[in-house]
Image (cartoon, rainbow, N blue to C red):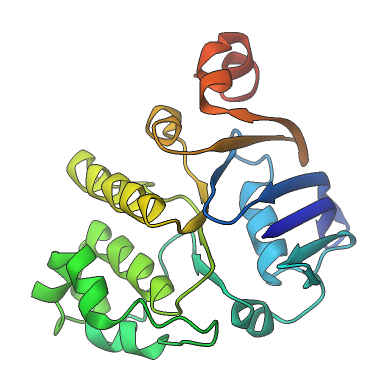
Length: 232
């Protein structure tokens, strides 16, 4: 579904990505792991067209999308839950969800009722403004907003960063449910144990290069790997 090959990217004269390659198949959950500053968010920005790659290519469903503007990439069927949530602060929960509603990919599975079923708390807060939500509620809203685009692939950057343990557990439960429904997901997070419980494969990034790919069993069995790249 998603194929990234030898991706390179820079911020001005400073090159951040040197050689990133990864694949995500239909219905797969793949994680992007690495210490802070290794290029995970830059990889997501490059995939989504928020940062124009300087080399390599990104293909989605076989079509070349690297170089396209972000809205065109989103229209191909990629939904993004960005780092920092970025909900619309002056819109209500329901307005945030309706604002992104789309069935461009031919599916209309995700409706308001479906999102409220996934996150009952959002239904309770549907009349609240984005600024009136807790961090956890904002993250639920950001996920729901991305799902309302009915994406073929859902990307989450820092899925549970800064959230309380109970809220983190709700987010993990949500992602496990999505996986059971064959939603393709690319997720970035620091909680390797939680990710290993439901992800199919993992890609580790070190200084702008993808340096390891493997299964959860392989990742958890290799302590030296975690010590070297993840400081676990």
